Length: 405
Image 1 (cartoon, one colour):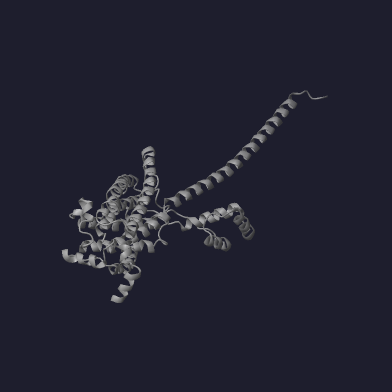
Image 2: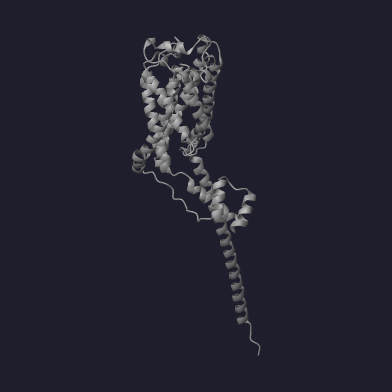
């Protein structure tokens, strides 16, 4: 075991790359003089089985707790039209789920014997069958709500009495010989395990508009948690996790009530979430946490490769915060001028919006067809009325004329 750890430290956790100049893993281990534990890379291995445990726990939670709760709150799924099986269209849909091109429509038209309009309608209804229902989205949001709320509460309790919670310069006092408290160690492990479980389940979770940004966020968060723990930047790392958890549970609760149709409750929670998000992600995070990692840390050690790696990940998170803040401000603008939160700009509602647009387009096309047919009927009736009037007038004239003797 010791030889394996030495090999990992030699090739992956090279102290000349990850640690400041003159600092070794032994220096970090000496931090246990104040009690607690010292971080070592092998501590993170437990997060892998815990991530699988989170996936199993989520499976049970969604079926035992979230599903009955969704029924109590009145969550309803939209009724989807089941398409008539067409093997060639089904094979095309499974291979290419995006909108078909004009050339694709021409090929399908020849092979299936259907018009292009019928093919487009079939593919649209087939996509609608795969859209997640409100119940599924409610269960997913409720699972994240419970975790984020418990993680934020536990993190706040473990950090509120620490000196670096109030003065961020304390994050570097005594570095690298800083002990990690047991509560903070488990805070790290649980957060890392949860984000690993999210990354493992990303292919089966509800696809959202910011799907790619979420992938980047999960990967950056996992690397940031792992690196900050191994390099003993645990004080900064716990603050980063706490700031993120402070607004995430509000977003998930707003989603839950949105899926349940509780519009006023959803709107109130969203306004509260938007305020907390903008303050914590655009003020507290860059002005306090990023600042102390970029500037205050230079009082302890000069810039090195790990310094740039840590701050690069923090800046990636900040870029994502700005992107999400822009989406949230768009929603706030709609809320102020329209009087309600129409849609979660960074959520899964894009698919529903596309579906509504497609249905509206289909209804509009159908209405145009009906309107045209009605106009033709009216024109036909009008012409018939004119002919009948002319015929009646002619009969009257003929009846008044004297008969020839």
